[in-house]
Image (cartoon, rainbow, N blue to C red; front, side, top):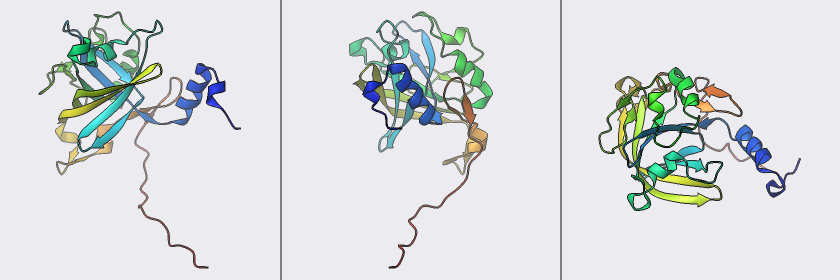
Length: 209
């Protein structure tokens, strides 16, 4: 089947996208409002940007009424009414249910930490706290927010990195089994990351004529 996405309704485009781009890592973002309220929300439009500098991105949709979601309001720079800082925590199997619970919207000014069984830990460099249970946490400052239709792509530079000692190998590599990260599939489905295999890089020899 050949498909012109411009001829599809948004719901169909969404279903084709999230069913094909899988598994997606999940940014579990903690942010702080100017009034001091901590927000926590998951985003599966998320990935690394690069390591020179160390940077990450996640994409945020608008609310149904067209206004900014709480996370986007908070991560905007102070000149635009936000704090310009946030923490990207990992979504892992041991608190997968809490990740899903935090996808439910709350009125602005309420904190997901008041509802879910997760705790905060102070960050080292930025104001928003990290999720204490997360084995890895990236403290970020907003570099750029790129509008893409009804979405905003938030690009942030990592200014501090927390890694729990037990998930480290030789102080510079992550033990994927101990990390226990989960990925997002379509619908209400998630996946584990324990089923892995290795393939060496490199092209095969060119066949001789």
